[in-house]
Length: 270
Ligand code: NAI
Image 1 (tube, protein in one colour):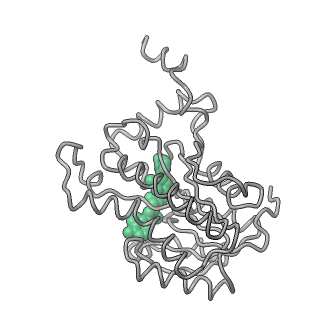
Image 2 (image 1 turned 90 degrees about the vertical axis):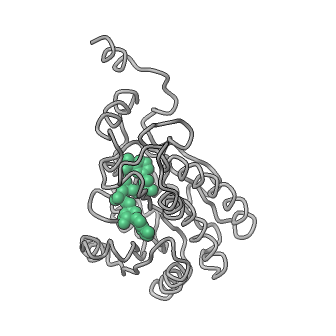
């Protein structure tokens, strides 16, 4: 059911790779809720082609940008404000990648060039988005920026290796820039810490299926789906959450507050 929560709002949505992507669901819901937006992803992701379907379904223009390249981001903001006919009201940062995870490197044998790449793609890119937006004055007063995080920023998950460090940095950037942009333009910046979700990025983590099941059994409400995550993000883009900023918001069915569950005890007793 749509509520018109984003009626008249303009935005930029990054990270929609295929229909499993969290960003894909956000784009569909943002469109249902009355928003207009541009879609962006790394030029290499364009070649896979699926994003074009999403663009057609949501009447959005695609503006390729490598999230590590400042000139690409400058072009993204410039073009977006042109295409949309004004400054944006919301931005979704849904970008993450670790070459070390892709290549199965353990935490004690990280390739440092790749480590820096992980941080650049998955964390620093949020700063780059915000700094470019500030310099171009591209976000309207009371705009909302949301980036996706994971609880490995607070607790250790051995297979999450350098992405854990990237997420900790991402959340810190959201706080630091949230303060700055709040003072400047009343723009809010938050991270949403999502349950394990079956997407391309998620499934790349070693042992993903086991920790997906574990999290599901630990959470009183079960794992939150990508679709539910999208609904939550829409509320954060809407005017109903204007005073929420600099927060890391758990969207995880209660996982982050649970010590142990009956289901997990049952499993251990088997
Ligand atoms: P996904 O694989 O569909 O999305 C990741 C996106 O990052 C892709 O669209 C990819 O093309 C984009 N990307 C990678 N390198 C890029 C670059 N250099 N420039 C621009 N874009 C680039 O997977 P998902 O799960 O939807 O990931 C979205 C966000 O959610 C990520 O930040 C991820 O870490 C986070 N997240 C995912 C969870 C999961 O279990 N799937 C759990 C918690 C957070």
